Picture 1 (cartoon, chains in turn yellow, purple):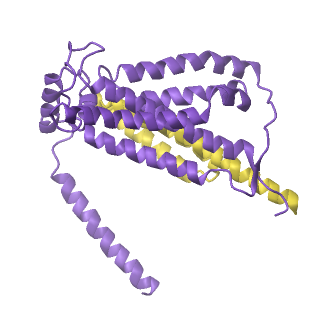
Picture 2 (cartoon, chains in turn orange, blue):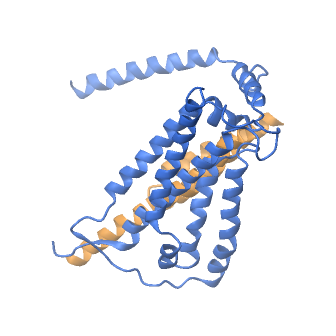
Length: 86
Length: 246
């Protein structure tokens, strides 16, 4: 039973990571990254590492995507302004 | 070096590394086995100091000095971000307009905010008993505050979040960690040794000696660091604009 759970979690993580790499738009990519964070948290929980799972949940699926989204917004705003000036 | 030679070099080096890694994998103990030499010793040391969560004991007692290093890395990283993302001379601040928020989003955010904040503080306070601790709880508490940005708007967030205070809090928390370490030194033990306080009763909030203290210091440091970091990013994304016509 344990092995099946671990295998399912591993496959989900591999699938999530592949989608994250294959997504080209940074805004979408950060959302995929958040989902990948949750999947990794599930994997760590299944592997009996709840401390790491909590860190992963807080940093990987909340903080990192948020910082990425804010960066994307800043870069887009700059692009728009340059577009206005021309 | 021609591109062809470079590709060959990468191929040879890469396959060598792959072969070594595969060979090393065959030498590993079996997956999910019963023999955990390090784990057994860590649990024993953790129980000797009456700390229920062995991970917390490893982080804040047995390897508290490692955690000091991690704390310093986070502090330096946030300091670097603050310096890099400051408002430069050719930028100005534009006050963001008050934003309209959909009532369901507002209701959800304002409902979840106190729950998330309390969860973060709970995770920090119970670090020595259950999974979690200063780092995890600090991040949860700090991100919970930012639900106000979702539920109300940027100005509401700025009102409850004086960044200067959080910058001071960040530095104070790192100092508190150092002072706890030095106090052990003054008490005649090694730096950061867990000899300062009585170890208390197993599985109670006050157990574990200095573990809860260091946990709280890390929680405060991480929460302040995340708030300051997000504040700088939000400033750049929402408020700071480059001067036009330069």
